[in-house]
Structures are given as C-alpha cells and as structure tokens.
Amino acid sequence: MESLLNLWADSGLAQIYPGQIVMMLVGLGLLLLAIQKNFEPLLLVPIGFGTLLVNIPGAGFDLAPVYAATGEMLSPGGLMYYIYEAGIATGLFPLLIFMGVGAMTDFGPLLANPKTLLLGAAAQFGIFFTVVVAALFSNWGILDFTIQDIASIGIIGGADGPTAIFVTSQLSPDILGAVAVAAYSYMALVPIIQPPIMRALTTPEERAIKMEQLRPVSQRERILFPLLLLVMVAMLLPSAAPLLGMFCFGNLMKECGVVDRLSDTAQNALINTVTIFLGLGVGSKMSADKFLNLETLGILGLGAVAFCIGTACGVLLAKLMNKFSEQKVNPLIGSAGVSAVPMAARVSNKVGLEANSQNHLLMHAMGPNVAGVIGSAIAAGVMLSMVGG
Image (tube, rainbow, N blue to C red; front, side, top):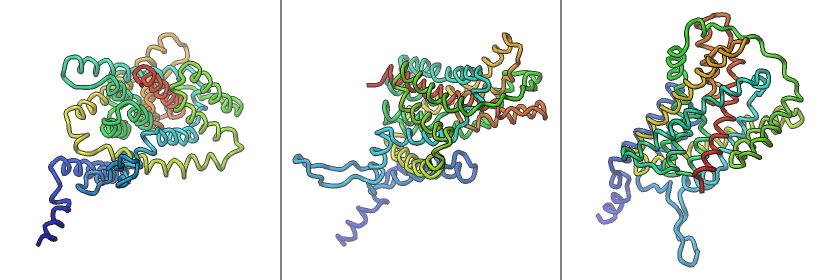
C-alpha cells in the first residue's frame, strides 16, 4: 500500500494545480491555431508543444541543475532548461534565425526605390509610442512593468518574432513567453488586422494608384548594400550590430553567388532546425507561474496597440510623401513597413488588387517590408543601448 501511495504522490494527477491545466489548454489552443488555422505554424507548433511539456507536473522539463557547495552536480537540469539557456539566453537562436532570413531576403525592391526605406522607418513609430503608453500605465499604477519590460513589450510592434525574442531574452526573460506569443500571433493575424486599418486611412482612389515598374538592380549593388548597411549602422549603433550583422551576412551569402551551398543551408536546413529549438525554448517560459497574471493581458493588449500604430504610421507617411512627390506611391505599401515578411507585402498587394485588378503591388511593397526588418533591428539596438545592462 505504501508503494502505491508513493506512486500516486509521484503522479502528475496528484501534483497538478489549476494554473497548469489552464496553461496546457493554452498550449493546445496554440496548436489548434497553427494546425487548423495555419497561423504561423512553424513557430506556434513547437511553442504550443513546449507549453504542454513545461506544464506537465513533476516532469521537470524546466528544472535547473542542482550543484553542491563543492561545485559537484547533484542533479542535472531538464531538457527545456538547457535549450533555453544554450540558445535563447545567449541570443544564439534569434541570431541564427536572422541569418536565415537574410539569406531569403531580396533587397532589390528597396534598392530600386530607396524612398520606401522611410516607410519601413515610419512603421517603427508603433514601438516607441507603445513604450510611452506602457510607461504611463506603470507610472499610474495600472500595470507593474519595469523599464526593461516596457522596452521588450514595445518591440512587439515591429512584428518581428526573432527580434522580439532577442531583446526580451536580454532584458526581461520572465515575460518572454507572453512577448513571443504576442509577436507571432500578431504576425499571423496580419491578414485580419491590417486591411481594416488600411481601408480606413485611404480613399478608393488612393488604393487604386498604380506604381511604375521597378528598375533592374545590378549584382554589384546587391553585394555592396549589406556591407554598407552593416558598417553604417554598426558605427552609429553597435548594439544593433548582432542582429543586423547576421541578417547582412545571410544576404551576402545569397547575393555573392559563390557560396550557394552555404546560402541554401542557411535558408533551409539550419533555419528549420533552429526554429524547432527556438519554439521549444520559448515554450519553456510558458509555465503557469510566469504566464497567468494581469501583466500578460497587458502585454497582449499593448502589443496589439504597437502593431496597429505601426501599420497606420506607414500608411500615413506614404500619403504625406504623395503631397511632395510627382511620382505617386500607393499608400497601401506603407502598411508593409512592419517586418512581417512577406505576409504584410502580400496583404498590401491583395487590398490593392481589390481596388484595381491591374494593380500589382507585391514587389513595391517588399521595399518597405524589408526596410521594416532593418528598422526593427535598429529599434532593438536603441532599446538595448538605452535600458540594457
């Protein structure tokens, strides 16, 4: 009987508490969104499954190793602990993801129409607007966020999952789960969130503006741009160099034409492998004690505000540019300034086709879309410089 009682005491059923049940349902909900609704499945599947693992009572997936005073290890840590510490706490996984994204990125549309860089920059206003709002909420006692938490929440507005994870892992690891889920959820909801904002801020005539075909971009331009971008940004803002450096390195491998095997690995095998472990590592921060609180709802809400403001600012700047330029820009491409590549550009193209069936905006929208990736990395560098350490 004593053995049976010990077996029952060691079972998950005897150790589980309501918060863990709720978080396991959250994990199942993420899996449902990924599998049935196809919302960012590459990340939400491992994040959702990681959430299930870390909330299994007594399994010890997230336990840290225990050491004796002599330094001898008394018990090893859990699998999720090592994944998080090795890949996310060090910043390794987000940086490798950025290298793969760089290898898949085409700077051609941005180089062909450089003024679209401004649209990518405008969309980052959502990040800094949300930082101010979150700071006010904390000052008024509505929410309890540190300045590091506020910077991490603001980055959600860039709609760039790896950047949000990189910044939050450095500044506020305790809210990593909520920030990552918010960032990837809003990226997945781009086709739902953005079109109403785009239509509300533009007229049918503006949405029907047809843009001229982009000029060809030479290979020399494509090779020089990532090098110049890295040097210029690194000299001005060294804290942004890790993200932009890996992004530019991946792009250089793609464009130089002499390391096709490395570029192919970065675009496929490597980024896929890292994505699996990145998702599981984020899931390790989705335990009930870290996720189920009022601040999590605040993070989700403020993240949505940041994303919506970023979308609106890109559209409004495009409208303003048309006031001073003879060569008109379709304001819809401004919404692609958030760095949800290439989803935001596809949404701009879709809404443009609704207004004019001959209006193909995809390549034009890729300019601000790629600029948004650069802008979010720079914004991350600003946050790390201002509140890090």
